[in-house]
Each structure stands twice: as structure tokens, then as C-alpha cells.
Length: 138
Image (cartoon, rainbow, N blue to C red; front, side, top):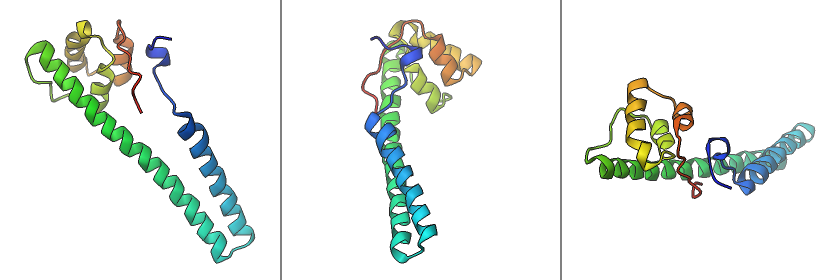
């Protein structure tokens, strides 16, 4: 199935549909146990589930931040290759990441339009006519 605006969002099932729900459920049960039987052990279990949740979310955020930096560098290089000029500095990260879905034929014009009209990332994605798929995202 080819990627396009309507199906480009990705979920990682092990993270989104297992790790997070199980951690939230575990935290809820641990809090319930602590309220029912307030001991040091049940308190430590609450703390452990809370920390597991924080670590899981932080690991995801760190991976996404690294991915964003790599994607920004790729788009800067692509813009330079296509135009021979430096990538505009007045684009926000979200705009730059949305532009990565534009084909080379429409990329430069869409960058100019984004700057002129201050398009949101969603508006940029909707403006893409020839979708450039990205199946290697985290």
C-alpha cells in the first residue's frame, strides 16, 4: 500500500498498544494497592511503575528528536542540491518535517509557499501532490 496523507501516521504496536497501556494499567493497580494497603512495598511498586512510564516516554522522545535532526539535515541537503542555496532558516521543525513528503519536483515551490503563507505542517502535507513515502520512521 502506498503512503499518502491519509495513511502516513505510524504506530509502533509494541510501544503504543502494549508498553504504554500495560504501564498505565500497572500504575493504576499499584496506586489502588497502595491506597488499600499503604506499605513501603506498595509505595515502591507505585514508584517503579511511574519510573517505567517515564523511561518509556523519554526513550520514545529521544528517538524522535534524533530522527527529527536527521530529517532536517536531509531536507537541508536536498534543498541545497536542488537550488544551490542554503535552506531557509525561518522554517520551523514541524514545517521542515512535513516538507520531507514532497517530491523533488514540488519541494522548492512548496518551501517558498510555506514561507510566504506560513503554512502549518498539516497544510503542507495536504498540499503535496506527489507523495514521497517515508517508511523508515521510528
